Amino acid sequence: MSVENYRSNYTFAMDFGTSDFKFGPITLGEQPRIVNNRGYFPDKKSVLYRAFEAASDVVVGDDVPLYLQSAEDLASRLIYPMRNGMIERNDDQAWRVVQSLTSYGLEAFKPPPNNGFQGYYVVASLSSISPRYMYERLMAAFVENSHGMVKAVTVIPQPFAVAIGHGVTTCVVIESGHGNSQVCPISKYPIRTAQVALNRGGGDANAITSEILKDAGYADLANEEAFVRKVKENLGLVPENLNDAIQEAKRSPRLVRGRYKVPGTRVEIDLDKDSWSRFLIGEYVFNPNHEIFESYFNRGMPKPRDVKMGDTVFKGMLDFGEAIVASVERCPVELQPLLYKEILLSGGNFSWTVPPKLQGIAVDAPCKVKMLLRDRGIKNVSVKMTSTPQFSVWHGCIIYGFAVPENYEWDWQRLEGWMKVPN
Image (cartoon, rainbow, N blue to C red):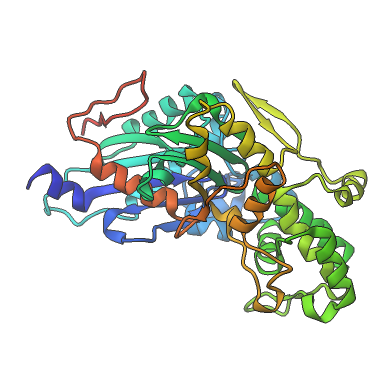
């Protein structure tokens, strides 16, 4: 079998998002398998655990909910390794979760024996601002735990994977996940010196959703992260103009009334007279600087702050329009108009819908970004959602893995190529 034919069956992609881990081989088509990017460290000293369980030190994947115990227990035992898209060099717990996820992903698609399988060509994606040591530790995880499942491995920045997946080589990619957002100009390759990182993502939308639930009388549910996320996804709205949207919601409360019932339970949320707050959830993602958010900060909700990780400063309060302009203006002037003509939005944090009855009050993510850019005098722009925002990185990884020449060996200076894994 030729190398091309082999890779057409055995290219494998892993997208380590801040909230979800998407993985699977090229044969899956358009949609990968998804589990939470997290690991649970069970109490192995428990008598019941020692008597009845034989699980590993770290539980990952679909089995995690079976081990969850008290809310207090979760804080120390449930680890999301890439909350901010980065892992500290010596955070051994987080790296053990990543290692377990790589093994879990590969084992889920272990081919039957004696079919000519010699290992996958694995493409793993990381945040575009990941330092070199993250590449080193991720590569080591594959080399040390391939168990004959990996033939070669490479790593690609997430925004570059998005651009490749959409067949564009001059653009700005904004990848926004649970923990952070990356604004990355691309001209044949990511322009690293022009990247802007935001310490804001879907987790912050969860935070404001939690506060809204408390105000509406659901304080007992406001600390369950998975539940809060579902409420955000089902009730959150992005306003065209926040002040106008709030006025309209208070004038016509039935129009925007927010209700959500958890399938398979008796739990039901009804925001009722507080339904105007649905617009705060989406606005907070795109622009947290509106004065209305100050009341939440004063009551104790953490304000998105600037955080330095490695050599990168993650900006907390920068709105998306300002972030895009700051990024593009770090590039050569003659390149800037070309970048504005192709802005791609990727990641679950951009998956906002507009109910038909709220057209003109609520908007989608591309429309909101255009408005923020227009406020800064940038008008000739094209802003598009990727066709599958949640999976666009994974899809781009598959294309990249099939395209990179098999004889292009890993280069630690350029951080690209294939690292062969001995079996």
